[in-house]
Length: 94
Image (cartoon, rainbow, N blue to C red; front, side):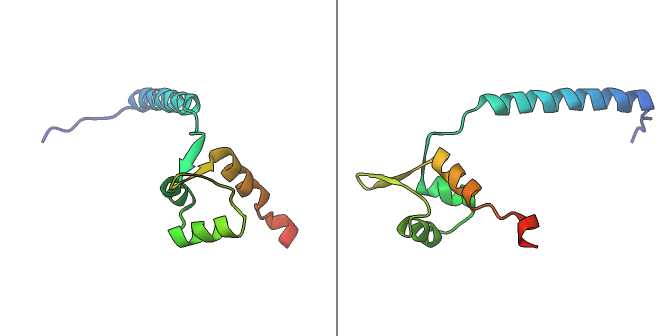
């Protein structure tokens, strides 16, 4: 099996390419917009919660929702607002 020697110049070039790739990915990510409305499965996945927990959050009024027909929709903006409102500040609790 042939052996290749990696120089510091090779590593520097690799670093620059990697930084360019990361910048490109971040630029693409920022161009994508968050969906306006999410379905229950998307919210459960986003928050890493079960369907029962999501139902409890709906019933106790923690997470607002809209029901159209048999489908429940959640505003992505309102989900974000709930997360911010319920943020626990560690410094205040100590």
